[in-house]
Image (cartoon, rainbow, N blue to C red; front, side):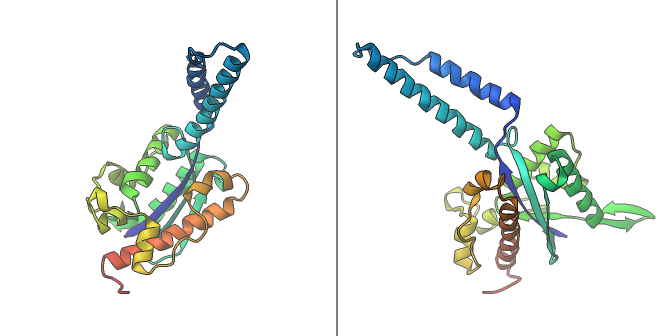
Length: 241
């Protein structure tokens, strides 16, 4: 069974994270000194104020970059499709919180992947398919599951511990080329394969769009699942151009 997977992530905003960022910023501010050739007090104050403003801006930039770090960022939505089926989603808003979202996602996978075996039930073999799924999506899911205290199904835990080339993972980025210098974005590979590309929305817009229009982010994530499935079929020669 193939599970085509994509997640969208947002920056962290926990009190602990913000306190840590503010503490780091304060240390940087305390270390600011005007150049020795500055003698005018007003110019010295202006210089220091400017540097402090740069540090504050840098703090926000560091916070926004936590959307790529499962230790501090959060998952906004998880979209997936099983084999040739419909693309489904679970998200932070409708679930109420991240822990419930993960529990809902894992519960659905258990229901879909369970088969009768020796008078009981067992999970069938699952392959998780995604673009950079080994390097990002699965690792982010792993870290958030650990932090949220949510135990994944056996198939997911197996993928968490697997190498990128193991049978339970099919990473379309690596399927195109395992050479680090030749790895390509989803958009670029779609263009090369003649698959409709993403349009005007991209991952850099997720953090700002999610609080106001989460449905746009979910639709974008579902589109990535569709594109992943189309790429996989081309890369495995199931479909021709």
